View (tube, rainbow, N blue to C red):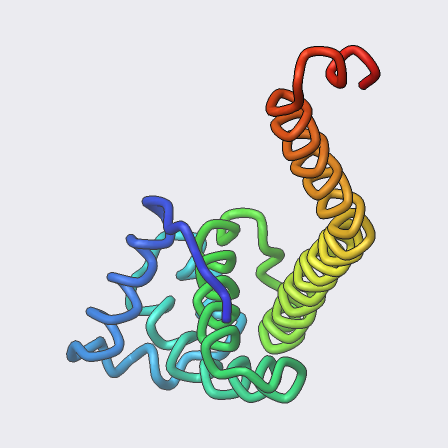
Length: 166
């Protein structure tokens, strides 16, 4: 399961998504082309952003879910993709294919997550191997110390002449 530390942009975009998707947005955005929505998005149109979300959220969600097979990670990817869209709205080419852009962004976010998970699994496997390889050594070391302490205790209880031998 993915965990996130949300920054102010994530919180802002989450608020926008929630408030706009549930609000009465301008009906004119529903008839605009993706190209026209991108132009409005560059002008920070919240209605355009909400319409893009309305049109594409299920496609992004299904694409990520198909790759990840985990609903929590998929919801995180969905939020990341639309956060990225909002944050990069000024640099997106208004003539680009919006669906293709979101598809590519989703794929890249999923691949990044898979790579991070793989690194995490490799680290945990390495740590488990290290612990397994060194646990016997640590136990042997502890046993050796305990044995030395017990031997020293017994030597202290011997008569003085016998102590000299040990």
